[in-house]
Length: 201
Image: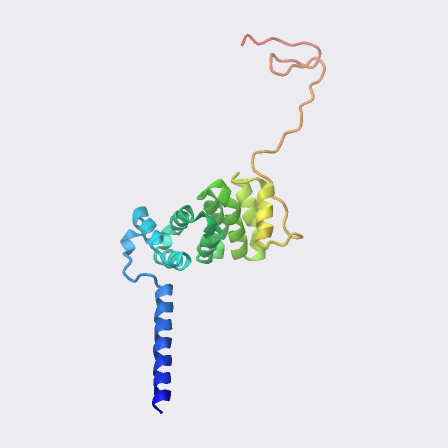
């Protein structure tokens, strides 16, 4: 009987310890001052001293909803190898209505070598019907090569049969201008009848 009581007590103690530890992971610090949400130095130190970066990041994103992009950027600067996981946490706190623009801003917020990871995270977190809008918006902003955007999107789960390579803004080549006989290009003007007047400039 004494042995059974001891086992029961030990089980209850262990369960309480596990529950307390889990609760601590979910809420890394109940003493975080909301007034520090815009203080990069405080945020950096808070992230740096975290035992579980993603849980701490998620807590900060929920605590500081007006500063989520900056917080994610600081976390990615400290931990570039965790860029995809960091921005997945960000996009999970983003409404669908804001997801496309947030994806563009998120890609802008990281170094070029991290941008594919951000695109992948955005596509993983978005419904399939937003995938094309996301890649098009990023390409239109001129942030990445269209082929790289497409590769990252497919890596993030976009349907290869349903998504098209975006066209980057501002790189379309205009058709060549055919000059009629007698007309001029840069210098002077012509009427197409063989004449032309040279410009003094």
